[in-house]
Every structure is written in structure tokens, then in C-alpha cells.
Length: 410
Image (cartoon, rainbow, N blue to C red; front, side, top):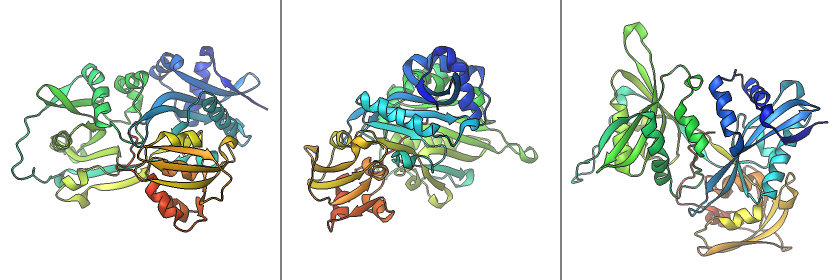
């Protein structure tokens, strides 16, 4: 048997060693210090075999942007690790149950995580909520289409700034750039501090961060943070520019930042990660085929309280549909509900009426932010249509104007 509980500050060192070991790392002194500083801002939860810590997990208190632009409390799950000596004993399931119970008790309707392995979390009701792209392009093919004919030339400027300036400016720019984007959650204060401290152990052989800003009439409208991985094959400089983050409040700012990055001397290749599916950059390039795009799973979403979650987001359709929700992990969600939606709001109430659709909890989470159509999930056996046309109606109900995007990895 094992016990799941909050850890104490005195147990942090063992807590860090466990999840670092499971992920194949030795924790740095910087990481130890950061974990101690963050301790009072999050819930650090461990599993214990007697007095021995055998597993770790963390719940960050975040705020999720829903379709329609409202933000709600979100449990950000991370550092989930079970010591190899105690696997296959139900420890992970125990941690997951503890997370759901805590969040449900606190009235938090959403949990989100980045999955180390994509086969793990469906059985706990998590669905693939957002998708991201990884990009790579060689320097000779970065030419961009010119600005529209008759468009006034930009009066913006690109500037390098130090880490302190970036620390002060990046949160505001990100908030403005991501306003209303489903799937977004801002970093906490501690997460921003960790990001800008730029621990050398996280650089993967590349440089420390470089920060640039795009400024118009004194106001910063875009920021980019990148590293340089130095390569000198046969004494020929062929660096890789690794864009860690690029946020722009306007199309002009995005174009200016990418143009600058593409023009950096002594580079042979530019890469970027965690980009949205609807990013305009591929359509800015003259030769878009040269931008190698790999679509990957982004964040995984869990609807902790299905009825409350369905009422909190906005809808553009007007309809009423009965869902038979299958949720073996969170029994309070299981059963039939009637979802009545319109642009004015939504109501979700229990019902005994015949269902239009049967839907698994993970499938409902996958369609919630608008990143995947219910019809796609139905073809994958995540749902079953009982009323003809119900799947097509669900497509319209859960549609969003913008692709959901989660650019913050934690």
C-alpha cells in the first residue's frame, strides 16, 4: 500500500531527485533553488511507501482561456514520475485520482498537462486538446513575400534587450498577443522567473537566450527569444538559430521579427517549436514547401467537472443536444446531460432523455477547445451517434474561430 499526500519543504530534495531521475537527469543547483522558491505557489504531491517517497507530481494554479475569451482556473499537472522500483503497482493511478479529487473539491473544472508519453493519459480522461508545429527551414529559402502594394512602410524598430528588460516586457506582450486565444494560459510569476533565469542545464548545447523586441512609437508590439547552436563544419560557420518563443500583437510585428531572425548572419538553419497550426508564417514565405512542418501533440486537457466546463465556454451555434458521457475515472461526470447553447450562453443539465451522442470523457476534452472536430473523434470510436445528424450538429456546436494554442511548456 502507499499514501498520496502533499510533501513538506523538508522533502523537496528527494522529490526533485525522483522526477529528475525518472526523466534521465541530474538536477542542477539552480533547479533545487527554484523548486524551493516555488514551493508555496503550487501543490507538490508525492506518493509514499511508508516513509519513503516513491513518486512525484505538481499542480500549478493557472488560468485557461476558453473559447469566447473567458478565463477560468486551471490545474497545470507536471513533474509526474514514479520511481522505477515501484512501477506497475497503481501508484500513477493513485496520483491521478488525487489530482481530480483535489481539483474537484476546489471547484476547478480543468486540468492540463504536457504528456511525456502519449499513450498514458487517455485512460485518465485526458484528451489531446491542442496541436503544435515544429519548424525547420534552411537559410537560402527564407525569402518572404513583400508587403502589400500601397501599404505604408513600417516605422517599427528591432532592438536587442537584456534579460531584465525582457523579464519586464514579455508578460504584457504575450498577454496582448494571446488575448482570446483558446487553450492559452500565461506563465505564473515563478515560471517567468525560471524562464528568464535560463538555467545552463536547459540549453542543450546552445547559447544563452538572446532577446529582441519590435517597437513602434515607443511601444513594444512583439518579442522573440532565441538561442544559437554553433556549428563549424570544415571551418564554415553554419549556426542554427533556435527560436524559443515569438509573440506578436500585430501581423506587422510578426513579419518584422521573423524577417530579422531570418537575416541573422553566420546561420544556416532556423528552427522553432510550439507554433500554432494557424500561424501565418507559411503564407508569408515565397517557397513555403521549404518550411518543414511537423505537427505534434500539444497540451492534454481534462474536464474535471463536465457540466460546469460545458457551461463556461462560449458558443456561436444555437442548438440543444443530449450527451451520454462515459467517465469511469471521475464518476461524478458519468451520465446523460442536455447541453443547450446559443451565442447568449449555455446550460448543461442532467436528463433522462435518449442520448443524441455517446461520448468518452477524453473525447469530449479533445473537442472542447475547438482543436478537433467531434466527427473526427467519432470516426476514431471516441463517440457514437444515436440521432442521425447529431455528429454534424456537434461539429457546429464546438467550432471555434481560432485554432487553440498552448505555447507555454511547463
